[in-house]
Length: 362
Image 1: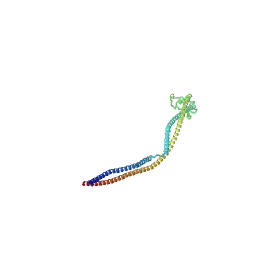
Image 2: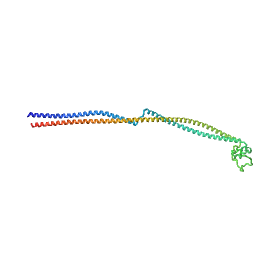
Image 3: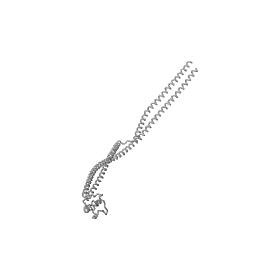
């Protein structure tokens, strides 16, 4: 009947509406599931980000601390007071070394001056000795001449003066003064003017300076003048030597005084060297102690960094696990919802097919 057909048609429309509502509900619910899942992921990521940033800051701090400790272990710093003491001792040693160099440089000119003064003194002393030798020879020559002039009868010249008045024109021209002054010749007179049977032309020979009192006095005056000249030279050389001695002594005093300064400077440098060696040993010991402390701290910093990295890995793993769990729950929920929706839509399709068949047969 028409009413039955109308009822069946109304029923079909209601089922179709249910299908439409079910499809809309499926889309809305699916969107809600995705949005809820994404919100959970964002919340999880935010929580992870905050935790991760905290752990990363810890890792960064541990890395910086390790680098600092590594630098300290590589170049350990000594105790500041010990370092300051070493710097002072080292500076004192440098100053002492500079002082030694300066004094040594100042000594060389003084040493050269002393050598030059010594050379001058030696030259003047040699000159004085030569002058004294010349004076002595002049004095001996004068004495010999005075002695010859005063020779007595016991000498050969005394015999000649007494027995051969003209001796100076003959025999006196042949014999040296040393023979004329001898007293051991036992002279005797003989006939003839020749000498052992040999006649000589004696006019070409000079007469002896002892031939007469006038020649003797003249020669004595000459020799005395020579002695006076030599004596004056000796006096001048002695005066020059005294001046050279004063210069040499002054140079020696200056050189000795500077040598004392150099000795003192070397002693001060040696003392400073010993002090800086002691300070250097203390500095090395302080640095070694600092190195051991730094290595211990470096080991601790490495352990802290390893722990921080392990914590970071744990946080990352926990976050990954949490995300995987959320994804799994979301997939399970979607699968269950999809299955329920699919079953419901299958039922709707069956009902629509039945209602359609019923409408077609009426």
